[in-house]
Image (cartoon, rainbow, N blue to C red; front, side, top):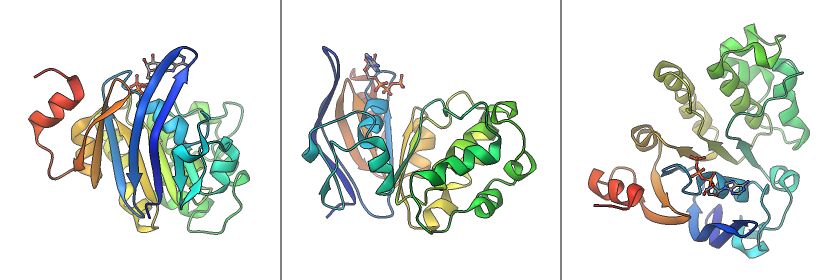
Length: 234
Ligand code: ATP
């Protein structure tokens, strides 16, 4: 049984259909990347998995349980945490307070505490009492990742964590992923940077216009196939 899977997942915004029957599976401990152009439906898929968008119960299964119709807090309580696109930190709270927010949804003992988050991203300890908004974009992304980890998730969903950041900052953030994987967490990353996605993931799904157009092991996918699945044209 897969850890997390979708079956014929659909999603709409009013009359606009954004996902058309997405089948995806995530295995225990695996890192999966979802790539695709703007508007392909990647964020919609992540919002469905995290309970922000409601679905048919059976469209999403987690450890065999139908979770498609659960609310976001109920999904988080089961161990699926999201690092949302645009970070969505609480601007009036300090860095430390933002991190602690992650513990409210799930009171589960595990590897992640303030101390271990500070060991992962030492700059956050230095800036712990600063308002989150006083930090650079990269540091704010570290807070958003730390906040999600504070719930000690079994599945970490990361939506476009490198968007708008300098390459050197992206490198620093992805340097934390081996440590996150060591804890046994499975990870889904949404990335527009294909090279980055292939580098950090075991398997890749490519989306276009609300559908999965290609999937496979990161090491097996060739550039032409990815290009076609990403852009549609030859
Ligand atoms: P991006 O890289 O731009 O975030 P994406 O692959 O994550 O793209 P989505 O954000 O999931 O794509 O959007 C999929 C489609 O749904 C797009 O056509 C988008 O315009 C539309 N869409 C997304 N959010 C909404 C919304 N709140 N209301 C209406 N349409 C939406």
